[in-house]
Amino acid sequence: MNRPSVLIVDDVEANLIALEAQLSQLECNLVLVSSGNDGLRELLKREFAVMLLDVQMPEMDGYEMAAYARENPATRDVPIIFVTAMLETEATALRGYGSGAVDFLFKPVNPYILRSKVQVFLDLYSSRRKVTDTLAAHQRTLKDLEAFNYSVSHDLRAPLRPLDGFSQTLLEDYADKLDERGRGYLLKIRAAAQRMGQLIDDLLRLSRIRSAELSAREFNLSQLGETITAELRASEPERKVELTLQPGLMARGDPALLRIALENLLRNAWKFTSKRPAAHIELGQREDGAYFVRDDGVGFDTTYAARLGQPFQRFHGAAQFEGTGIGLAIVALIVRNHGGQFWAESAPDQGATFFFTLALPEESPGDAAG
Ligand SMILES: Nc1ncnc2c1ncn2[C@@H]1O[C@H](COP(=O)(O)OP(=O)(O)OP(=O)(O)O)[C@@H](O)[C@H]1O
Ligand SMILES: [Mg+2]
Image 1 (cartoon, rainbow, N blue to C red):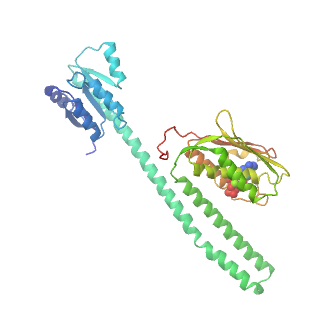
Image 2 (cartoon, rainbow, N blue to C red):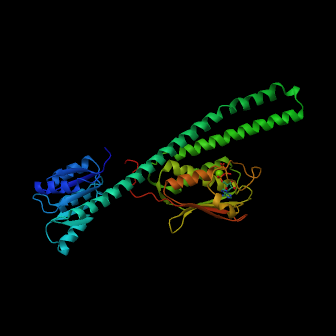
């Protein structure tokens, strides 16, 4: 059933019979047709490991058929062996290669050479098959793991609610039966339950982004920066922060996901400059195309840079700056899904600059219609 197929196109019945006989001992399924048109039709019906094309045929010759096959993405990669009676001049041979030829066989065909050439392509086909099958299996496993991850995180949240709720009830209704120390313990239990809830929520967010479909288009990143920083300003109007947003920055990607990424970077810049009496935050693009968010806040030691973008990695204490350490993991994931790179430059007390590139192909399948 799973034997690879070989297509043979020749307008002379006797040639088809001869080729069939010579290839009969190979582990493959032979499909014989007598015209280029029939050949193209067969190519669309199933996968072929290789096709043997007679060059001289009436109506459509082998080169023409090859050219048509190359035009269709579904049949483009099927290797071709041209079978020809003519002694090839360099010009006709080049015509063959121009249409994507892989090899030539000359009539009368030597059965041994024919078989070994076809065998090479059968082997190539089956190794490619194995690789794609393995890849598909890995992708399925990844998807399963992701789903498992999601449901575990989700289920872990349920027992936290009574834990937190009953601790609170104890504190409120039984406060007089507990001494100071007992109440202190309960407060610690509540804080831990809430923190765990936060971590689980973060994991769920990460998991949702990992499985999000990209819907890419060209959009104005500067405007996005304006919107986000306006929200930050409104949240802490008393802070002195000078914002420099390079105007007219264009980006190609998923606007909703990139909003999440940019918001995390700008929010970090806002947070890690909060101890400065006057801070400066900048959004821009370098000449090489890399976008950046720069601040003059507390910075961090880049010895840790390798851990950047891993979930729950924080380089400052929770007492200094609040947060769970999921923001940059989300940024790294979104940038990676856009085929880009994400990195940082910083030093303690010297501010920090976070760079990212976006490298979606011009016309990606993720493109939003319209
Ligand atoms: N602009 C910055 N300046 C200095 N350090 C930073 C900056 N941005 C990130 N960091 C360091 O990287 C760590 C990870 O950042 P990330 O955004 O992932 O977590 P967070 O901001 O601490 O928490 P969360 O984003 O989940 O609320 C931070 O805890 C901080 O130590
Ligand atoms: Mg953050």
